[in-house]
Length: 78
Image 1 (cartoon, one colour):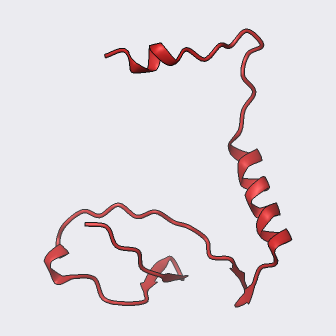
Image 2 (image 1 turned 30 degrees about the horizontal axis):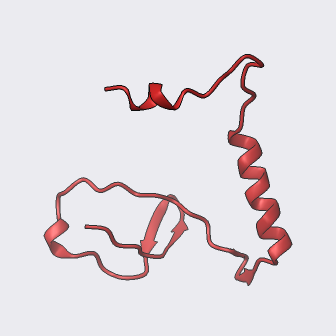
Image 3 (image 1 turned 90 degrees about the horizontal axis):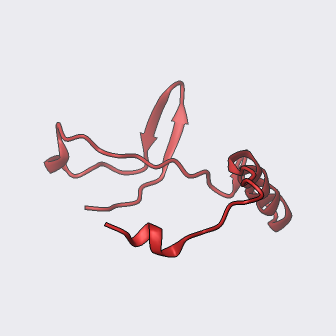
């Protein structure tokens, strides 16, 4: 099952915008955290959203060695 809910983070707790199905009681769930395009209740401008993306990309990028070569066949070997 996949469902997307909004939540507010407050004092170390996620407060969901709606209740979760009782059938999920006691089950482990995976949670993906995505920030909204708001800051202090105000919609971010396209420039601010672009900068947020570039900052995240820079934080998670790395340099490849100069002799690196992508081998498509290697990734499909089983």
